[in-house]
Image 1: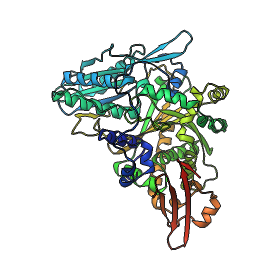
Image 2: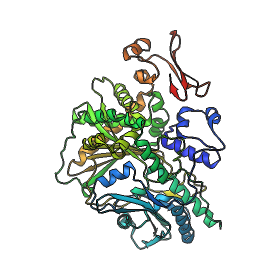
Image 3: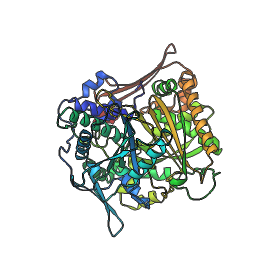
Length: 569
C-alpha cells in the first residue's frame, strides 16, 4: 500500500495467489498489510466454491444492469468498452482466433443474451457457443499516415455499433492490417453489460496466455474460474433482502435529501447527448505520479481515491462558489459480503454507483478539505454497495423513494493502474495497449448520464484525468480551467505531504475510540510528530491495538478492543 497499492490491485494479487494455489480474500490484504501477516491467514486448500464448467441458463439482473435499462436508451446495443492493442510480432490469425474462442467459452458474461418482454422488463440468459466469435480483418495498409487515426476511429465505431443484445455474444474483435512498416492493431469491443474496468485485466491476460499457448502448439488452458457472475447475482439478490442491508436505508435516504447546488452552465444550449460531448485530458508527469501514488496517500492517511476526489471537489466548489458538491461515485463493486464468494477473476459488469455529498464548508486549508472529503468517504457503509441493492433489488416503498431522488450531476471514477502490457507481463503476452482512437463507444443520440464525468487512470506511469462534458452545457475553456485547477490542487497535495497540515488527525483516524476533534487537537496539535501503528493484531481475531505516540511528549493515544467473531466489543 505504501507503493501505491489500491483495492483493484488487491484483487489482482488475490487472482495471482489463487493461480499459485493460495487462497486469500481481497479484504485480507487490507487487514494484514505485510507478507508475514498474510502468510498466517493464507490457505492452501479450501476457498469459495466456484463453477468449474460452462454456465448456462437464466440469471437475475444486477443493480448496475437494472440501472442501465432504467435509462431507456434508444440504441441500448451501442454501449461498449474497448481496448486497442498492438502486437510485438506478426499476428498468427488462426492462433488468435483459437484464443478468442477459448476466452468466450471460459468467461460466461461474454455469452449473455438480453431480451425484452411485453411488460417492458429485461431478462438475461447465458448461452452456449451457438454464436461463434469471428475475427474480422480490415485492410488499412493503403491509408496515408495522416488519415490513419480517422480511418481507425471510423472502423472502430462501426464495430461498436454492431453489437446485438439478443445474439448471445457480447464480444467483437477486429484485426487492422496497417502495412509492413506500421504492423497491425487488434481492437476488442465488448458491450458494457458484459465487462467492466477490472474485468478487462483478466480478459487481456487470458487472451495473451491463450494466444501464446496456441502458438506453441498446446491446447489453450486458462486459469481456474472464480465465482460465476450468475452465482454472484443470486447471492447479491439474497443479500439485498437482509436486515444488514435494510439498516442502511436511513443513511441513503438522508444522503439523497441533502441539498446541493446545481452546476452552472455556459454552453450553447440544446440536448446534452453523446454527439455533443467532448473531452479535456490533463496529466501528471511520471515523477509526480510516483509521488502521488507512493507517498501522498500515506502522508495524509488517505486512499488515492480520497486525494483525487479532494482535487475534483476543490476545483468544482471554487467554480460554483458553494462549499457543497454531490458526486456519484463508481466503484469496482467487488466488495466482500459473503465468505463463499471470490470475484478475483470474475468477468462482468459488477461496478457500483452511489451518491455522496461532500461538504467543505468551514475548512481553512487544503488539508482540511482533504480530511473533510476523506472522512465523508470513511463514513460510507460498505463502500457504497448497499445503495444499489436498496435502490434496485429491495422491492419496497423505501426503494421507490430512493429511485425518486435526483441523481448527481457529476460522476467520478478512478480506474486504477494499467500496465502497457495487456496481461501485465510482456514476456508472456505479445499484445500491448495503445492510446489510439477507440471510436464512438456509445450511440451519438444517447443522452449523457451526467453533466460532467471525470475518469482517472494511470497508464505508462502517468496519471491522466479525463473530463467529459457536453458543448450544449459548457464551453471548452470552462472545462479546461476546471481540469487545470484540479491538477494544480493535486500538485499542492503532493508538495504539502510533509507539512504540519498533513500531520493533523481527525477522530476517524481512531475508529475504535470516542474522541472529539477538540480533544485530539489538544493531545496532538497540528504538526506534532507521531508514529501511527495500526492495526497490530498479535492474536488473530483477538486484541486490536491502535496506538499513536508523540515521541518525547509522554502522550499515548491507545485503542484496545476485544473481538468476538469479528465484532468489536
